[in-house]
Length: 268
Image (cartoon, rainbow, N blue to C red; front, side):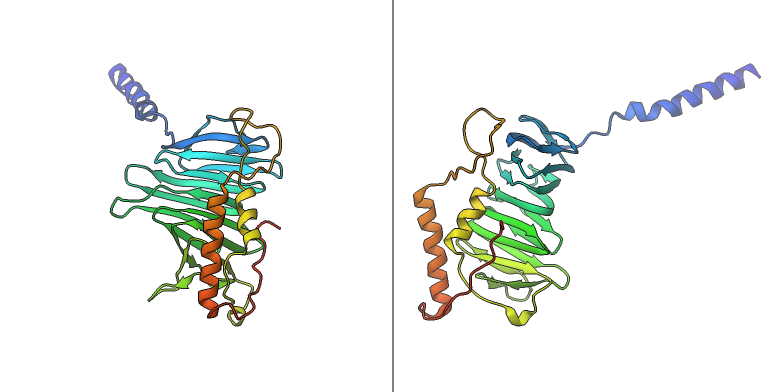
């Protein structure tokens, strides 16, 4: 009888101890926060420079906050104010990255993907944006996804009943995806009928606003207490981006004779 009791006690202790033996269930590392303007959180707790980022971490900013994060593969994410971004997955070895943004704006400077099957995707409620290595902006507000490509090429796929408007990219053969190149933009929305589809290049003011709205000024260390709006991009870069946008717009309009409709400001 005593032996049975001892055996039962030992078995209970072993069963209770199994989770401990398996080790803590921690997330896989995705990178770290490099700089921020206060009023930003990670998983609902105050964020700090050098904080590690793991898979499924949620970054949030309020009206006075911004965050710049470095991923393990060298890509950089610059999250603007009033934004929410979840790092669903970042496998730097396999080059598999998936981000979700329910609202706000983010600039992604992505290293070139060279691994077979590699991907870098940003998903909003009505679109999926995929890249192979580029520099681009994504904003989501009022059921509209705005995508601006600064360098490289972006593939934008509307979800559900969403359609493309204010599009200066071009449709991909055999799918509803839209290829957006440097100096181009597209807006994905579920509220504008397809008959209102318009074609135009990215206006310079929209291009500048998208960059400044996700920028963190240099100076004062990794945590910056003031709410600056310094624009850290070169005159050469602006000329190239705007020149590409104007050239594309002229090509689409057949030489610039038609009147182009202005794109909605991605940061009203």
